[in-house]
Length: 393
Image (cartoon, rainbow, N blue to C red; front, top):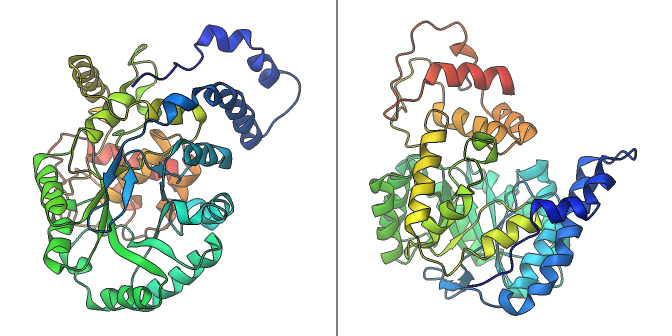
């Protein structure tokens, strides 16, 4: 697939955009982002012929064919980026009730209002009980301004018992009967192989959204293969294994993120991917990754990327679960720290951290002595916990 490369730095500087942004006029971050995106949008509009080349895959047993590149909207602030993605043929959109303090669903609802039947819309709810699931679903439908979602997922599960919770399953069944959710599933960040196997066992769920990237272990990779064979659609989130904040200048001029996304897309057991997309440049880079094969160069880039992020990036394998005598939710704290450090989304990290109780967050780690938690990937857990509490509390 050949897609014209985005403007290089020299052309960007010549355009005068930099002077417009750095001049005397103050712009808030939202408007600054939109100006930059509008600039890139003019360039991407020239690619219509190439942009029609998009790969679709069977979305499990739903009967739907999803674009291999889906749209992860968690940190998107410019709605026109989603509009452009839909114009290019992207037809899978992922959001959640809690994203951007509820505003994510609202602006997505406005963008898709006249395209609703042409895309597969997924949202996610924190489901502590049947009633909380039903209440959350109603709030999401109102925010999205739609009568139904294509898929409703229970958000952030990490154990077999949560998956097989009959109260939650009853809530899902009711929503399906009422026509408010066509399909149901789970999202999982940690202990994901156990979650997936429980979903297969249940013979009830249709989709799983799972953190999956080149740092994932064989146990998860094999579970994903089992899910696909069982007809459960696998939606890969966090395919980039971190973010630009972890890289800085350490990768020199190499872009590891296309290589990381390509690694996930090359797994035929994955139905679609939902990387966070915040700009037209990211959209173009992600789009041109479809249909391409992993190369020796990709593998070298990912090897270097792994070394650069090795002491920072938590694989969320959850092997450390239960080791802390204070019951700190280490995997969750690590993920929220990644939002701040890796994604550069400090407020998202803080908001997420606040969802943890005093008994679950890392505040106790400050005065703790020698940490008894041993990370199998050799991360310094106490150092990371103290850093998280200092940055996010």
